Image (cartoon, rainbow, N blue to C red; front, side, top):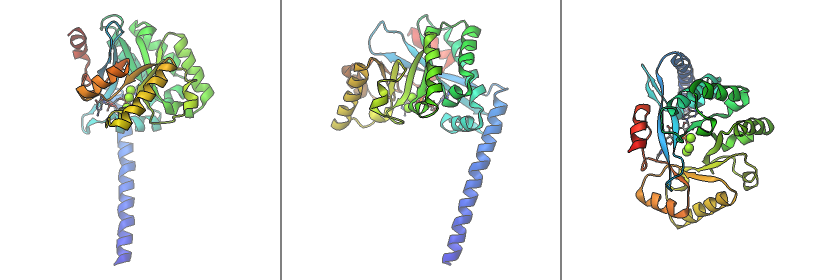
Length: 270
Ligand code: C2E
Ligand code: MG
Ligand code: MG
Ligand code: MG
């Protein structure tokens, strides 16, 4: 009976793997089809300055509502898009839509767009960004691009060249989910970026030790000249603590959940 269990175990594993592979294929095909329809949309989440008079920002977050699959989480479909190369046309669409949306907001409000490393390595990103700005009429100074630390573990020369070209146009760059990836204090000093978004895992459980770590990260980032965003703010207590630490911007459900494009103007005017 042990043998049967083992055989059974392997069979179950094979089936599970098969399901995962077929799910990915289904997702990839459906995502490809959705690029042609209007199943994709952007929602926007505020990145709020702690001090008045500082430009406000809205982060564009992709939503996919597939007729048969329902709402699929970006945590699920972004990796599929990245593996299949679909992230390049998908990211192109996101850039255009985000810039177009930002044109209807008050002047000075910045739109922040997530970009995957595959878009940087594809060689198309600079042109795609230029096209999105030209198509929408948005000033480059109102576009921010979020990348994760992992982009620096790839072709470093190419990545830095693309990032430098973006910054030369007046676009600002932010490191997303800071502290969770390819972290090294040695490289932090040389990062060609303007903003550091400290990952929400650093504020979820703010006991004494966690506060000290956070304060150290904030003062280090400040000392190196970066503007600091903390993401995932869910409580008033976190908000007060972070504002007292001198963080520049806060983002999270306590400030606002991601909202439909049609709700942004009213939120900014409230
Ligand atoms: P991210 O860029 O770090 O975005 C933050 C995620 O945390 C969003 O999830 C947001 O809804 C969620 N969030 C915001 N505030 C809170 C909070 O207070 N508590 C909690 N628990 N969560 C909060 P979402 O929209 O599901 O996006 C997940 C990830 O998918 C994003 O992480 C980003 O890496 C990726 N993504 C989303 N849209 C795009 C896109 O257009 N292009 C690319 N390349 N990636 C995208
Ligand atoms: Mg982001
Ligand atoms: Mg983030
Ligand atoms: Mg995050």
